[in-house]
Image 1: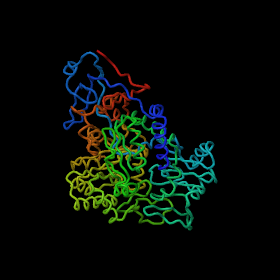
Image 2: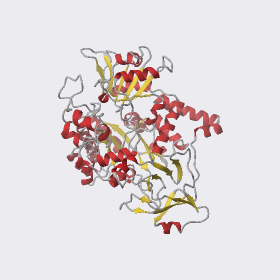
Image 3: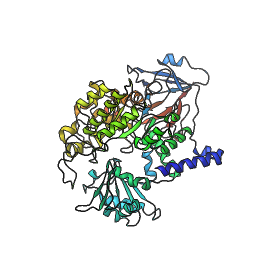
Image 4: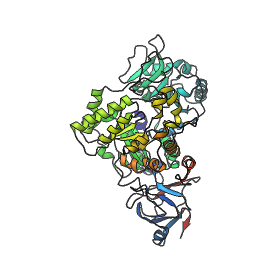
Length: 587
């Protein structure tokens, strides 16, 4: 990734400095017209304000909302040149905010082979993986890495990870790297291990595991957590132009999903710079929230070589520092307080409960250092033992440097217990729940990873509501596709892929779910004064749906995004290459 962004920055410098006019227009995104006054009438306008007020009409002057009210009140503001949208009863609401994801990761299909299983893709076995990789290997040189992503061992009929021998059958000479759907694991073939310098004598890195073959010190090809770092920087060494293609594809996917504020959680300083400049050039019209990864930037922050103050604007914010404490439940690397319900195939330890990337004192020190320098923190914790570590570290930092409104974020919080929800409320922590797990992995959490009791209460949204704890929900894209309808529907219904309900008592209502991707997501990143709800003075970041998500669960799952506005400019219209500036009616 470092070389990708270094190449991207070089491309920007060459195009903007050496050939400034052509370079500027090559890199810059389109900027739609901004009408002086736009009136939205005859709709169901969900404001998501403190009272969840619903109105029929709204006026937008320039980039910001001017007034909300009845159709007659808003139409009375009409003058020459005013753009009037007759919403015909459709639902208008604040643009969706991605509370946590990895932009532009959903654009990986532009540079790699998608190995997802149903319902996302069609990979069902290791043989399917081999066939897909063999087809991809027909292009590119022998020295180029063959990159695949999205495989999920628990969905394969083989019920195991591929190993280096499986990948060697595709190519014994060309290096191959497969990224697990969780993003926390990878598989490499023998040529790839050799290229990365990983052999029988290579020690496990701190916070990671090089899985070995049975009764041997030879690596099997499977790498867990920090061990993936030994290879990923080489295997994902895409060109600057490839990266731009990824950005463009991901940008369009997010717009089609109604996302007006995107998020990239866990970047180094080079990617931070790359995304910042692409945002300035409006290659992505969305607002961008970036979380630099502590492991990658803390030394630069401490030395003064990097200042996040240089990355703040209405459109871009380096809003929090991310720390990854454990891994993923489906990858058996989340840190649990009790053993996994069924151990992974081939495991010889019935007491295995995953592991943390940190010792508690190490985490305490890092969290204290960053907290005492007034950074907001976002800590990844999936297993309940990891969540205990997060809560302890934040408490330790607050005791050292009390801050009244630090808003630390617990990322994922899959296994948060009731006592931990209470502690979060006491400590002012915002959990961001990966609630789509109930659909994509819910059956396996219940039957394989966690068991019936623990599986039923993953992503305990209702407990957070009862505790009056503000929370958000997210998709962690590209771990699962950018589909806000699916995210909202899973939060409300908790239906699994088999159609069963996982933890009925943890369901929330539709308005609560909508708040978790609008105003509460804005609040999570200190942006609630400008975005997240439709109120006077806020930016007109809007999404128009083809049906009301409040009408039924079916509507919630199947709504389509008709149009998207960011700061009053229309950037997306369904089934059109560009927006009709005057969408339905001009008077």
